Image (cartoon, rainbow, N blue to C red):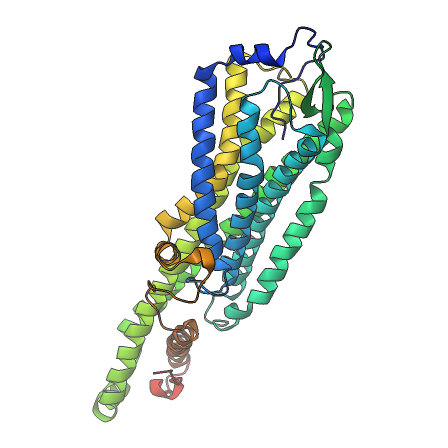
Amino acid sequence: MNDTNETEEMWEDYDIEESWNYYDWSELAPALVIYSITFCLGLTGNIVIIASTLCPKLRPLPSTPTNIFLGGLATADLILIIFCIPVKIAKLFSFTWTMGAFICKSVHYVQSVAAISSVLTLTAMSIERQFLIVRYYAIVHPMRAHYTCTISQARRIVIATWTASFFLAIPIILTQIHKPVGVRVPSFWCVRDSDSQLLWRIHELYMLLLVLVIPLAVMGFCYTAICWEIWRVMNRRYHMTSRSALSPTIPSNNRECILMTDRGRESSRQSRTKRGSTRTEGESRTIKQVVKMLVAVVVLFAICWSPLLIDNVLTAYEYLPRVKHGPIKHMNTAFQLMAYFNSCINPIVYGFMSKHFRESFLAAAYGGWWCCCRRKVYTPPVKRHPSLSQTRTTSVGMTASFMLLNHQFQSLAPSFHFPLNSFQLPTSD
């Protein structure tokens, strides 16, 4: 990302000692404070997330594909914070680049790798959620959703995104140069290669499409499909529950027979149906909460990174000046701060929007995550195994489906009276 102000002129009167007298602390202080806050919050928060999701000895959170993806996302943010923010802070106190050609290219390369890895991980998460909910979030395939994306598959996807990120970020090495400036005192700048203007413009468009346009289009489609499917399934379940509760089409003689000969079993069935409906509503709330959290992360990523990426494109095509002064300079600085601040905001989002993450943060902080020891003083509440809940939901959902089918058969051919309890599936009680 282009974060330097460049000019074609040589600084003949430049002197390192004299430059100390020209610091504008009204500009430096806000940037220094925000970078410092970003570094502290991002370092702490992302380490806790990695410990909560990826540490094999602690792992307060259950090992799920989503948590594996979130661990990979936190790793990208942590790398950006550790390798790039200290360099940005040091650069605030120098008008030139004093850290050599290797750091010039490598720090921008790491920044590109982290940005690409983050957006690829977010895209993979949206696709995984979309396949999970849209293709299998229905009564006819309730148990197959658990196998849509396994833990090992999620790990392979994260490794693939990192491998792709290292290759996709290579063009920045070609466009970022260590440019000599000054005559009386030899100095250097770390800037885009303006001599190869075509390459520079292609690279900025490439980054805009790769990091912003294409991923947001894919994620927008996936989350729109997810929201539509959740609404459709919830609406269908509501009508099925209403029909099952009312049962207006069951003949009176069948109803009396059931009440007289099978009252105990019917009462037990209704009790299990009510418990299953409550669990289904709880699982639906959990799914909605996860989707809301992931959408919030995607929206924040777009808000934080899009201004800098667009500014780079406009600068490369000379719609904005290369040498930034006045309001344009302050705007460019704000865009850089927003991009880096995104690396520390995700743990805050997880903490505000997910009760499970808040509990895992407490477990990691109170249980000694820094050494990944086996001793855990604080343990978050343990819920029933998901497979049990899925089995119960399967039984209730399929029973409701068979009840609806029975009503349809009765309306078409009244001579066929199927006993409702004959379709009762075994539960895991």
